[in-house]
Length: 394
Image (cartoon, rainbow, N blue to C red; front, side, top):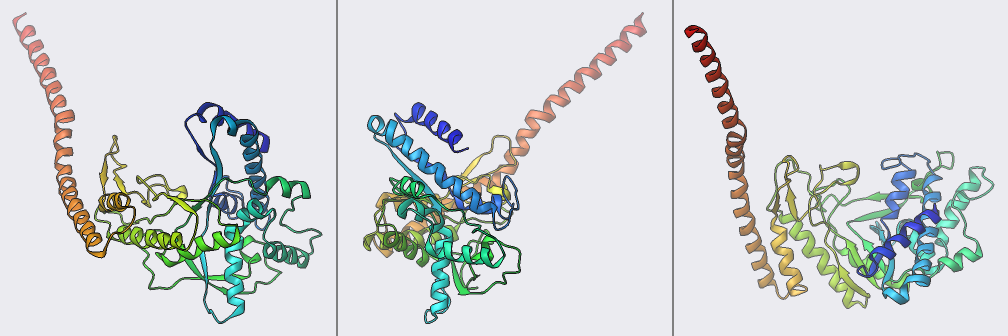
């Protein structure tokens, strides 16, 4: 599979490398591994608890390294591009900052999340805490070897340094506390960590059940990357919030607050010295969202999926985000407040257009369906009457 993927990547480099200069080998491999091979929530739907996710991740990491070396050897000198990987991670904050166990559990949370993939790429091997915990639990469960695969000395050297930039996808934060799980339980990635995840009920939660708005966690995660991995070049590849309301929501004030809070914390991280060069809001349009389908909407643009032509309508966050990126930040509170006011005014106008849209749709239906149908019936009735008249005369 590593060779097959490398062949695919080389085909992409060959066909598009003259134009594409930033390549991401894998996006969000944590979800691919954990939800595809541990819980089975996502494709291919395998529930190989405590084993499958580790094996899948192991192959993803080796495949990423293979592709980076292919580009480095064959294409870099001609195309002058960059190859990286995009990793998703929440931030873990200790419940009790005075508890050493909670502090270690929070560190473990991030290492099992981000470090699982980033550590081999930037430091040559899995995080020590991950190797220790999975190895010890595997031994307690009577296994001869750790459920976490190992890299050979040659593989460690081959994998280390294989990223020209690090993509970071970040959405939320959790409070973390120590929690011991029995070794007699079924082995799993989640119990291997010996921790519990908590949320503050005061955190805003407008959309996906897992997504709480906690802007300060973003700055801490970015500084963690800076400290742990030698301050690599970072591009934020995903950051945003969803909505789960059934009715159309164009005046998405919660999304504007989310973007304001998270982008502001990102700018603070840049002031801290984090080597961050780009930010991408997630996402441009409402779209197909993993196993949630179209029920959770992350888009800056609302998409009406019920209509054949899938019309798109700008939410208030479109106008607001335009102002942020035009100013490349937040000039002053008064101007930012004006952005908010203008965005709400814009979405109110769009809402009026949407309110009139059902009438337009009804008129279109009358024009496209009812009128031709009536016309056809008139022709049929005329033909029948003509037949009767001809028979009568004959």
